Image (tube, rainbow, N blue to C red; front, side, top):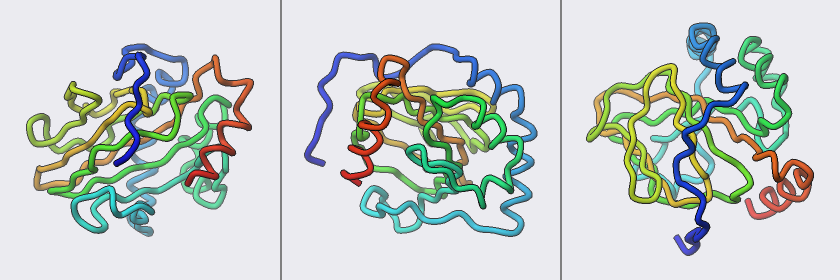
Length: 192
């Protein structure tokens, strides 16, 4: 990739938020909604297949992306969508699958205005098989817990286990950028 973010913010954010606790409290219900949905529907392959080591190994179910609501999908996830609607600073939410032996290649996100937040739903193993790197630090996902990071920093994900990895991914707009939400979203959408 051609862009490397050089900001001095920390890579991982070890902080709790009101919304993060809300999702943790409802972990079982969120997982149950996803299980019901998956019996009838399949996730879609991530639009940018050049970011993975194997075609169709990274899949998503988006309920909201860059403040655009996907109400037809949200109807299948009443608890999850209900929590999402409570917090206007949550500008994206999707379920994210990484198939066995999948790798999301190292890349930098689109803006430092958000924290990208991973909530473990189905985690097959820990490091060194399954994990996540931001800059030079590797961490593991844990079911029912958050990994929050600066999306602009270089990061990558691996699932070298024999089972899929599923997380809930949220983009949280940092409060200092809230007044510029329209400009940030339009800039990112244009670049995509």
